[in-house]
Length: 423
Image 1 (cartoon, rainbow, N blue to C red):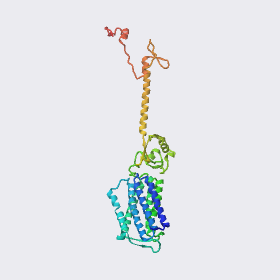
Image 2: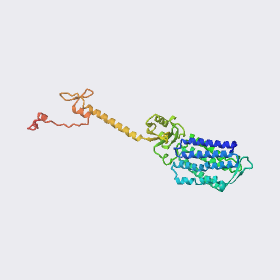
Image 3: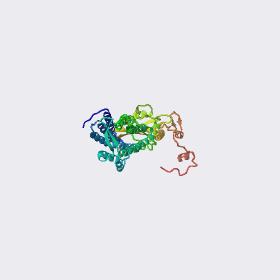
Image 4: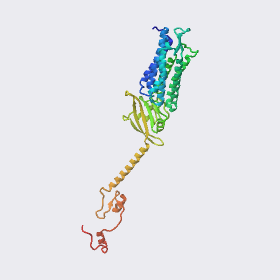
């Protein structure tokens, strides 16, 4: 085979290179939901672009036709893979049944087989002939199976767009991701539609792989700016948004991936930009996250001052992929104000009891008492009667009567003649 590489083929090769770069970049995220399908899809785009560039540069109808068939090895897989990515992105990565996955590839496989045997059936291209207006170009007259496949891919594209768009209301965090994904989905379809219009300035060149170069750039932006694939909206509206506990998700570098309304309320935190470094910002949340980074056990009790003081308990957990690499940190924030108030009240009561016990113990020490009248000298030096001193320093109350000895001495007529029992 001989080739004559020109600007069209170089442009398609550049598109394939971008697709490979995106696929390699997403390899590190294959443990996340949707990461595997996105990686496979971009490798399929790269294969499509390489084959399309070789078809454009090849000399001779036989060589061009062979590479045209080779493009189908990549392009028939793009739409089903993107649909699987959208499905897992939207629904949390629940695996699709093997039978349904096989059904998704029914028309693509049939199309690929028909393209490889097109010289026998003419289902994909009903006619192939040299372009009379352009050198080294072939005109491919599309057959019936081609239009069936295009319609099927259009249905998958619309379904993918619906799945991604339905994730948009689930929180502001994912709006940027949604715009990136929908734009990346729309651009290749616009390029495909332009290829059939008479106004196409690049007639005879397959523009769809080149359009995926733009999609690849958008995905790069999405992975860098909007943390695409770092956090997937898994039933977010029903779980994360409605949690009573605060939830903060940071990437391995401490950049903010997500924060739910409960966490913002607990810290009185205004909406923060995705990708920012909250531990470097002023405010209660910034100080709390900065202090938490220094704790080896990943736990911190933090006080938020204000009209009502709040005690918050922060617990950090590491999220690692299957290779053990740190992907993100999950921080759960709980309001423990009620518990801390109870603990403070308990400490106050214990203090009061200890103080009371301390006062009681003073009565067990040495008391200066008169050996004659039995009066006690207090702290001020005054001599007080025994019953008055005890009444002032305890809850004891006195009743007055006479013992047997005093009764016989003072009132012998009232005393018992037998006298007291001997001891």
